[in-house]
Length: 218
Image 1 (cartoon, rainbow, N blue to C red):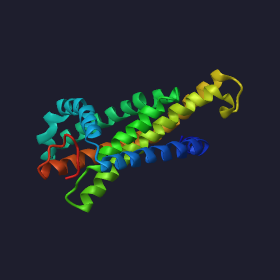
Image 2: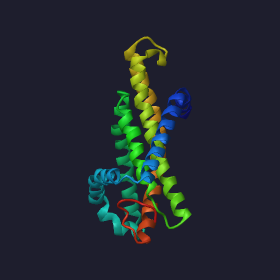
Image 3: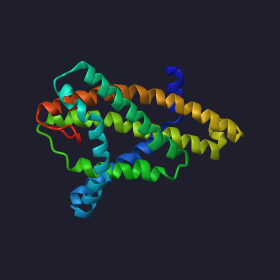
Image 4: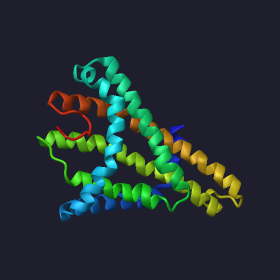
């Protein structure tokens, strides 16, 4: 299984590198936008995040005290919820739009730009806090790229079946979905680790007086 997954990664390395570079550039652009000091854009980003913050609070609010106190059941439950949300988010927000290729400009690149604006304003009490926060976030962010690769590969395979060493678009479509399944093995592994990492980080945030929503460095 892992051999097949590695082969798929190697086969799609060029597409992965291209999308990764575009994503990094979009994040850098967002950070630059933050330092440019546009209040209008800052207000837009804040408004866009408000609904999601309310949804997060409705799901995780009841777990705040148990997580702060280190209740194992609460930590496991929250980790599973985070994992499920991230898996569904990767598939619906990056893989499915990626099949149509053009929406990648909105899902991955515009999303990276917005993310960069937020990153430009983060503040941490220590280098350790910032390092752990960025490490935790990077695990999730890299899956956005992998999930997008899975979708774009499907779209390109239908347009250019020779990518899958066939002349049949239908066969190329099926083979590309097989590639996507292999890529999702990597995504599952990364996000399983990331979910636990995130909840343990949230616990530290709660212990230092933060609320955990929105999640920012302690």
